[in-house]
Image 1 (tube, rainbow, N blue to C red):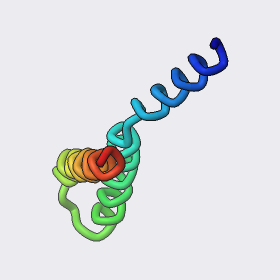
Image 2 (image 1 turned 135 degrees about the vertical axis):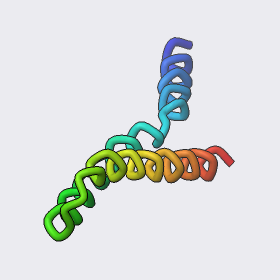
Image 3 (image 1 turned 180 degrees about the horizontal axis):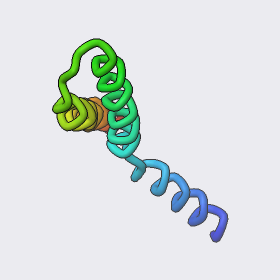
Image 4 (image 1 turned 45 degrees about the horizontal axis):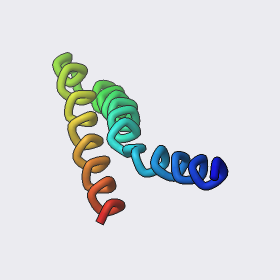
Length: 72
């Protein structure tokens, strides 16, 4: 009986994982990379405020869409 309970608990933990955290992390990295590339060509200091923020926003949306597709 313990074997069945352990396998079901592992399966529940795997289903509880979310892609939103990965989206936030990779979005932040992508936004910072975008900001550094754009910052080399244009002298617009606010790009460092908007680039990573928009990257995280896009990452959250992509992670949420991936979660909804996985659960359905």
